[in-house]
Length: 366
Image (cartoon, rainbow, N blue to C red; front, side):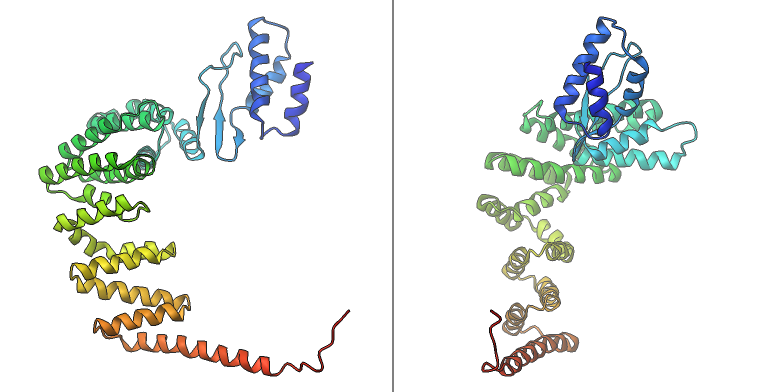
């Protein structure tokens, strides 16, 4: 009877389950298989084919596997959609897979592990990598060792954040000349900073700052410290912003890196309509007399406000140009005047329309 009930309900919605129904189903199968009752094996086989990839939530998928005796594997693991997609590609690797395709898949998996990969996905990928590409696995053993620690930390199986940061610094210092590894480390650092700063207090920030400053002193590489400054600068917390001010005041290299990347930062902020951070950038450039960056940022800011048809904000920016004695180009002047004239034209048209309304001839329709 229970099997018939399951057949009826699962056939109606074979791709979407409630988790409670799935648990009932697994318990029934365990009981019947262990007691070797006479089940409809054909139906179970058919259901097994359906259950290889079932959606349980909008953002989670489940993989389940049966043994030869039709017992459900106790290690039922959850992955997100991106991990599921990569696992399917890994499982489809065969003798016809080209080397270029494998390199692309390998790099995609490593990038995912650096960004948000969890422990189950790490185990799945590295077990395949060690067999298919053992040379690469051995050459980058230190990276995978750290990604293993990171995946455990992400699954909340280890909350020792200080040790995680310490191992990250050691890896960065020992392999600072490996450009390929450093690129992956930058991705890892950015993802790690976002996770730590959103969940931990100021003590964790101080620990990270001290560790990254040690990297700078030993390797003369300020990339990690710049990423820390950027995340603190964009933070909503006052203590983080104060730490960011201290970093940029104490390290000339961070100011140099900011000067070379200011346009890229502005584009990102404009894309999110975050003009507050652009204003803060202008204040930093003014404070450290970085006139070239002031001019570049203000011109981008003016173009953005003209594009948004925000005449009041554009006027304030033009006034700042005048105060700083920064000339505008002919095209910038023309666009700004067009914005103002269009605004005045719209106001006059609205006034004329209001004058044409004949109040005496207006009639209520009730």
